Image 1 (cartoon, rainbow, N blue to C red):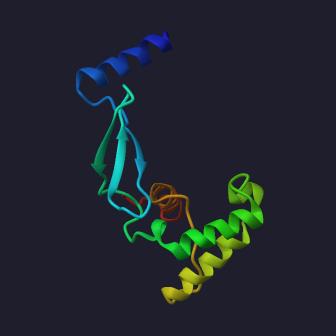
Image 2 (cartoon, rainbow, N blue to C red):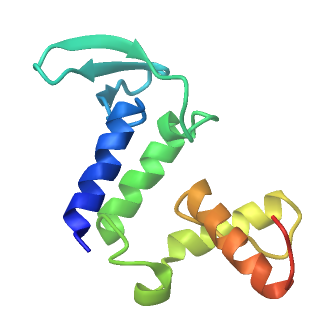
Image 3 (spheres, rainbow, N blue to C red):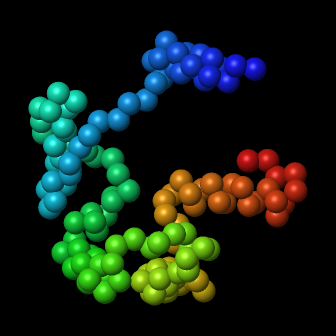
Length: 135
C-alpha cells in the first residue's frame, strides 16, 4: 500500500471540500478582552475581536491570578516537566483541586489540561465501566 499517496489523497479531499483547516496567528491584548491583533502571513497586522475561548470568566487577565502565576513561576519555574502520572502532581494543582472541590461541595476535584482531554478521558472510561453503554 502506498501510504503517502493515501495521505496525499485525504489532504486533497479536505482541500476540495473546503474543510482543510488553517489557523490565524493572533496576539491577545492583555487587559483588553476580547481585543487581539491578527498577524497576517504577509506580516501586516489587523485588530480583531476574539469572543471564543476557555477563559470565559476572564480569570486569565485577573490581577490576582497573574500575580499568583508569577509567584509560582518564581518559586518553581515554568512547566510541569511532564504529565502528572509521569512527573508527579505539583502542590499548586493539589491546592487548586482542593479549592474547586470545596467551592462545589464535593469530596474531591480533578484537573485536566483542557475540556477536550476531560471529555476524552470520560468517553473512553465509561464504556469500560458500563459494558454495552451507547454514547
